Length: 300
Image 1: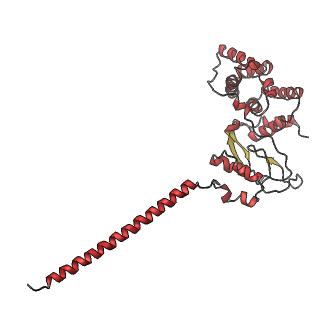
Image 2: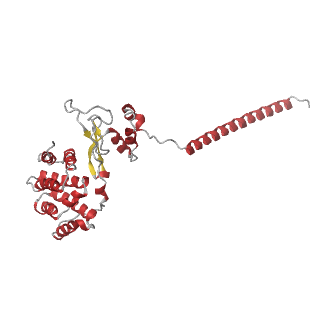
Image 3: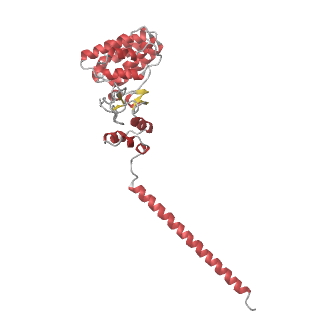
């Protein structure tokens, strides 16, 4: 069984200057599986301890964990994070930690929460805390973010027994671990999910693990989901990973084809008319020369 506290320790590693996004997501993956208000409160209690830790790196990473948890979990979690108790801990980070990185990031989160949830009476505490911080001289950045940013969440993980792309069976003993694509939620092996990209639509600005198909789709700006549809169709892995599969599968419209055909026909007709005109011109020149020669040798 995965130890949630151990994952939180890894996500808030005191030895790391920059946040480990993959470690944070590993933690969030398990956090999302928590059932019941009591267990949610207990897990958030562990995060509170990290927010109040004496190590500045740990505090900075804990603030990022709060952001990821809030953006990737349910309204039940929003209710606890935006409660007076938890917001007072965030306020303590801002007012008492002396950690500039953590203070600025926490202020950004508070501003986002106020923008997204401030008009909801269920989350009145966020307005009150932000107002207090403003009165105490803390600069609250101007951000505009809607609650929809917290509603669009990454898909739930699908616990497959084989890689969805190459169909290799997962086995811890053989060293073929299951990994999840952060964009589609399906299960893949390491070889088929070794790439990373940011996923702004989920509020993820740092590169995170995605499968090869989603990587190609994100890089192309393809939001149609055609690659996932192809994957679900059961097409062979060899085809899905080929260059042909990465090309646009949208057929050329009949109208475009007709226009192209008409254009080609018109061009051919013009060339034919030009050839005929040149031929006639040659014949007329030859006739003119013949007449001129005949006149030169006639009797006076």
